[in-house]
Length: 160
Image (cartoon, rainbow, N blue to C red):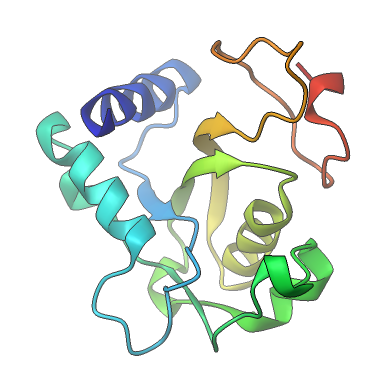
């Protein structure tokens, strides 16, 4: 599965014309804390891209400043609520970046990540997500969608 995700990421980057060796920055998982050597999200992206020859482009450019409250315990996941907890590395300044995530639900973390990277001086070319949270059984589960994520999604089925 991860190897397929890696091929998909590389194909999307090539199709979109995101050239100039962009940094591939994983959207941080909840364990991407300042003292973590490796997080679940960076491990997933590294394993997925290892067979593609793009492993050198993966960069952990985002971290949470502290542990976030669990979403199941009323931990807010809206962009404006989580952005203050997110920090970007200074090493992204002047670099082209593509965000990589395993799952898109409403886009709050993706949008907060994009804004933090841009504030740190990066140019975010776009993002690639492997899957989406499915709330309705009538939605086509597998397929390829391109959406313009400019605000959080209340219902992803409206956009695909």
